[in-house]
Length: 197
Image (cartoon, rainbow, N blue to C red; front, top):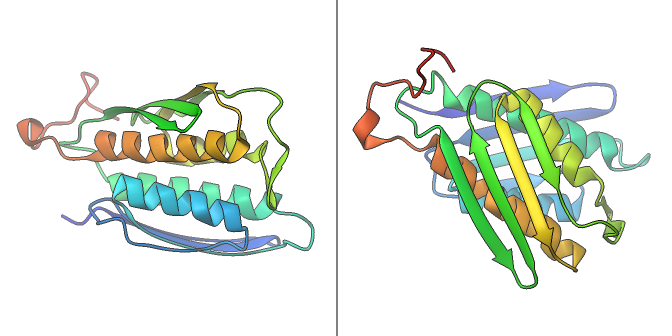
């Protein structure tokens, strides 16, 4: 059974297309117009082993906020769509990823209940290229709201802003991969005592 999602989202500010295959090989085709964000979404696809296409045309003449936010909303919706009924998946996933001096710890529950806990070092450099580093939390908030998952992201230390953000995306990719993979011991079983996720 195919586990794919496709979302098109158009507003007066952006036009977004996201396609995702949870059982892919990490092939990506990313173009949002924000170079560092493209790099992060590429990390998500490659380290999650998700085939991921993201095409966003946004109002970058204003700034990158709408482009980044609306892409994250569409990505979350596509991920939720691709999960389908969630029967037979592991449901929970976690991963800790170092990137030189930085460390990210990510834990996810594909619970159907959106909740985000996010901590990262204070006094980060405000910009990475044209990427506002305060947007990382907002990306996660937007993704969680549409994917309907519980997500805890903790960066206990780090100095370089690029490293701090990138290790979060890499750890998120792996945690999502582990949580969404099929559990061979639980084929046909919904991983919930409630009978619903």
